[in-house]
Image 1 (cartoon, rainbow, N blue to C red):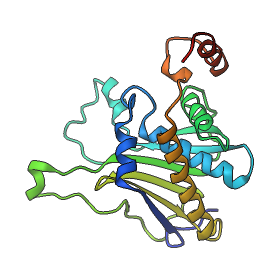
Image 2: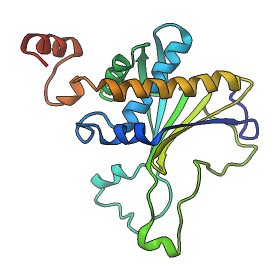
Image 3: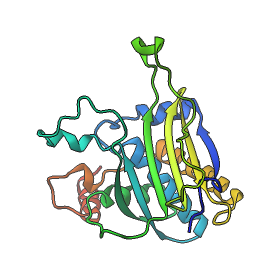
Length: 231
């Protein structure tokens, strides 16, 4: 349905280094939404803007899978290498307002999602590619975000979106089958994602219920509290 890896084409864009620095060093970054949340919200916002309306974006968020091992004391993975991939389905209510979409991205992570729904987007934020340091004599960071696939392998999603910070810049890459999405459409989506990301960085991030995990409070409740007592 989504073509093969041989059919896949990629669009790559980068957020300039100064804007990436503001993104990474923004106040509250350690306790508020992460870069992955912001990038996913920016992507969903760009998709809503392309559609010209509020829309639901079904996403499979890919993770490295090792964080779950922390609670698996009986499972010794210390001599294991490789990629423990996890997929977490999210259903995001995307609007043309980036801050509103971000709030729903954060709430979506707290909602229960039915298993088996078909996701349009595979999303993976790979974090920062850093200098290997003492291992530099034996290893070096691979360039780009490429992953080895058989050309005959079937693509699993209409859009395969990955992001990483390398050489000080946030780099975005979107894989697609031109039979499903034209390259021009995906180029517009990539540019729109970076535009929405800039808006989030420059406009700041509002408080959301996810910032108060112990409180049973909705976004509407929180908005009322902030209006009453001031933000």
